[in-house]
Every structure is written in structure tokens, then in C-alpha cells.
Length: 151
Image (cartoon, rainbow, N blue to C red; front, top):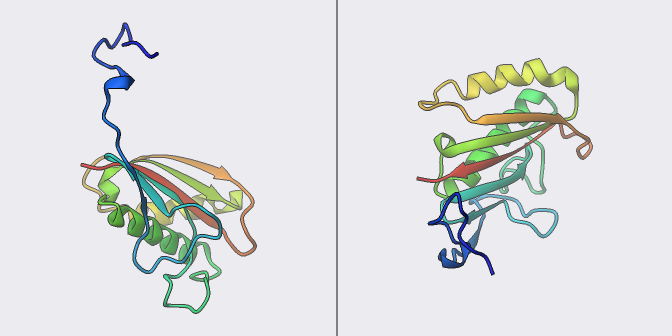
């Protein structure tokens, strides 16, 4: 049985209300390739799954990348993250953490230029960000996920 923490005597997990977890799927989103959600919201926490640079469903018969360039894929990826954020009741201003997955270390400087242009209009402090280098599906250059606290 969990007891209140000595450093936080008012915090007792057994007394916290249960908050349902809701899957978030934006309009026009293609179906994920496995059993996971585009985003999940629990209370005011919204986690956006890793998004890639696919065109919205309906703009292509099958899932199709926005293009072969880092710019095309990054802008489409950011728009896909934004679609999940908005479907979950959030904006970029609510995002605390973003994780970027790039396939090529040589793309870092170009990615930062695209990033700075995209987020030039933020009114509040920019989110924290981590960038790692990974292997993605053939042709994919970038994947991005985000964590937001709504409200």
C-alpha cells in the first residue's frame, strides 16, 4: 500500500482520481502500421507518437512520403505532429519535449534551419528537444514525437 511521501505529504497516489486514457487520431491520418495510437491523452498530458513525412490520407492512395528531400519530409512530419496535437486539444505552445530521429548526421545543420523557420512564430519559450540518429524505413529521413501538457 502506498503511503504519502514525506517530502510531499499531500501526494498519495491512492487518492488521485482515475483519468481515462483516450486515443487521438486526427482527421485524414493514415492507419498506423501496428497496434498503436497516433497520440494518447490522459488528463492534460498528450503524447504524440513518432510521426513521419507521409502525406495525409486522401492525398495519396497509399501512404506516400511528401518527397525525397529532408525539407519536404520535415515539414510534412511537423504538420503531422501538429495534426495530432490539435486533435488532442493542444498546440505547439503546449509542447514541453520533442524527440527528433534523423537518419543522417549530415542533415543536422539543414534540419536546424528548417526547424528555426518553422518555429519562428512561437510566442512562448521553445520546447526542449533531443535529436538522435537512427535507422528508419527505406526513404524516410526524419521521425518526430512530442509530449504536451494541455491547458
